[in-house]
Length: 191
Image (cartoon, rainbow, N blue to C red; front, side, top):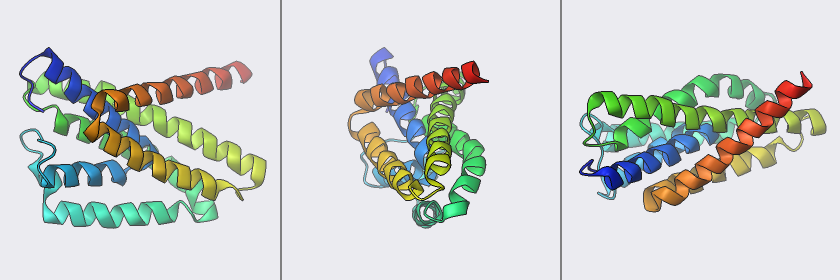
């Protein structure tokens, strides 16, 4: 994206928010999709982010994606990973959002990436951790493989959707954030 006008900035922000929200499902899937989209010239990354499409990065993101997805199918490890995934998801969300906000002044780029990208990733990560905790409590973890599958599919679909139809992906991310906010409010009301 090239920040030539307000519409370009809006589309770039929608792209960044969609990819960042996908980081809340799985940290490495959106990074892999972003790198592949850049590699095949479907996506223009901002200054200093071309490395996301490099051979080394794609190999690392591919391996990390496979390991991350597989780890969520290990019964006790999935809940443990949710604790570590929060900060990683936010960091990845900020990174992908900043990467696609090409042409924006540095202060605006990083502010939007931190607030919108980091916030989207954190909200979706909170929602997925809450769903996994409910699944663990209700089924003693026996249904967590279903949650893991839905999260992996969600990360892939939302990542691809963000690259192909950014405004639709941002709308889906907003819906997920509303669900997370609603869940948080219910949780606080009970406490």
